[in-house]
Length: 139
Image 1 (cartoon, helix red, strand yellow):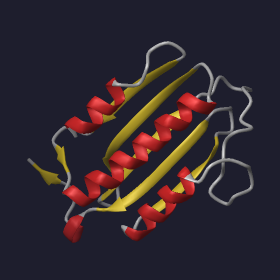
Image 2 (cartoon, helix red, strand yellow):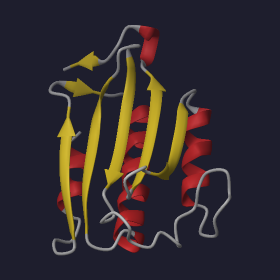
Image 3 (cartoon, one colour):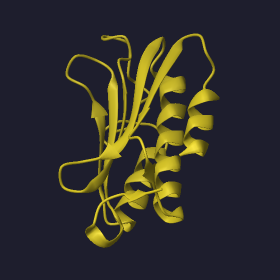
């Protein structure tokens, strides 16, 4: 999880404020850690490119179904233009980053969603199975 902390810390300060919340003691195998890293990296890149002045929260932890839950949610200053955002269903113009993330998460056996939040902003969410179905690896 240290590489994720470094990634979040590297986000330029100024128009975007990022909060990072990771479940204490959470340790992942290399494959899951790479999926999570790429998901957070692409999501933060999109926040910087498209959200304008915003607050963003990155959350990584285990869900009720003993799965890994990753969320990157920004407030995009409710009402800010979202024209550059691309939904997973392709209904908006934009790059292929989120589509690639959906494919990566799917290959890992997880579920993925990305889209505008009801009150403004944008959310990227993924749920990934934990190894062996027994929950997180504690280290």
